[in-house]
Image 1 (spheres, rainbow, N blue to C red):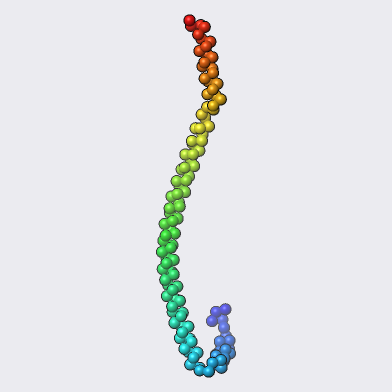
Image 2: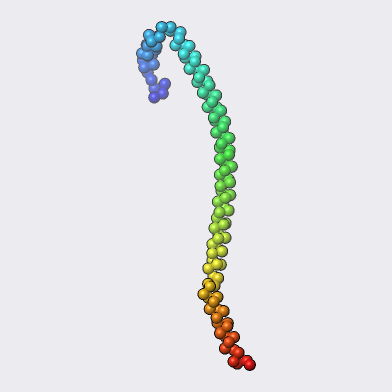
Length: 116
């Protein structure tokens, strides 16, 4: 509820009986001055925090740019790895290589009878 929404009888000083609670009515104003000073201190801290938050937002914008660059690099890396996987999958297996060596040796042994 905001101050504008309160009616006059809801914010009347008699309703809160501030004077009856303390022996010195001027103590209320002293306390209010202290509260005002603390609130001013808080506003300075809030302003300081907002300045620091401004710096954080600039760093966050820089970090977002760095992340987008990294994302592009990771996408290119995925393409390169997929290409390498495709090339490796086309290489002959060990069994194929052993079979080729045996075929060459068998052909050489068989040809020695024809070319003596």
